[in-house]
Length: 148
Ligand code: RB5
Image 1 (cartoon, helix red, strand yellow):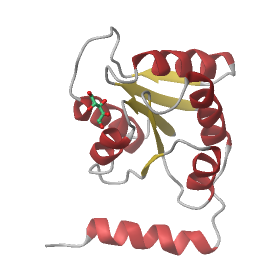
Image 2 (cartoon, protein in one colour):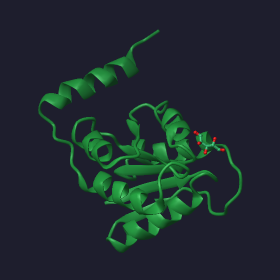
Image 3 (cartoon, protein in one colour):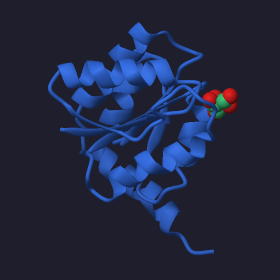
């Protein structure tokens, strides 16, 4: 499975650690930056990762900023993206099972690297449950498609 990953300066170390971790577990990782620890605007990276999902080149994405929140806000503006900011195991698992989230957003200033690796594992290894959740996801899409 191909995973797109990105971060701003608030998540640089976490992003690199997650990238290595997933590669060691056999995932193909597309690193959308940043590639050096410098200050950037998180929406610029969020859109790069989001578009890897919407253009079909990656199945899932992971974004890391200071809180995970700015990245999720920006990524969720891209049509077709369901980004979830998580800092606990239950949320990281259930946002795949129930919300079919396609991007996990993490806070490099909220959780440690060990927790980030575990949440990334849970996210990429959990499949959408389907069933009763399909129509709920469709309702999110309907909101997205609603005209003016
Ligand atoms: C950058 O200082 C910080 O604002 C950013 O990483 C993120 O936490 C925003 O949500």
